[in-house]
Image (cartoon, rainbow, N blue to C red):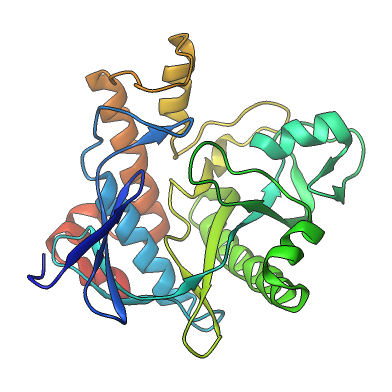
Length: 287
């Protein structure tokens, strides 16, 4: 940790430090949250997976959108980043019917204003990826909003740019991931503005915390899918009868080990890099 770093905030997973007026340090912990509650049990190396995968994608999507990454720390879990004025919306892209999108579709036949064909089963691939913005909730769940509501928050022209960029990023990552045996069912992106008002990709990108990853060889529409993300922990917590309010339950060793294995496998499949090689030299993901 640089001596000049000043702690300025904590998220569910990350610690945020100010380096100076232009730079921030984001440090990803091994904390895991489910149903918006941080659990008392850490998952070893989870923060390194999130940081390494984000850096991998940032390095490969610069031609589609500039991003905030300036450099990686030797610990493999910290990123030096540009300060941005973050937009007040979550930018969700969905390629398959899952999660809250599936719930909305069953109730209304649409997802965030996107009318979809009738009779689609759970986990079905959509005819085209769709952009479905959400509010940023400081506490509790993000709430899906319509495109008009998002435009009220960021402006119509800026929203058009965000939508084009988010869809382009999703298509790029989804194509690459599919070639590596992983389907990206949906993902959450965050954007900010730099000092010149340019759109910049920030936070994390295409990680098991921000995306729903499914193994392509086990994909079967009509049912929930196995995954490389937090679903393994969610499923365990669901079966406990926990009321989803703090404090969260402790995770047993087998759930911790299974979760770590899923995160590491996602990292290795998507990057083509052995995780131990990344731990030894985080810069390998930028090459």
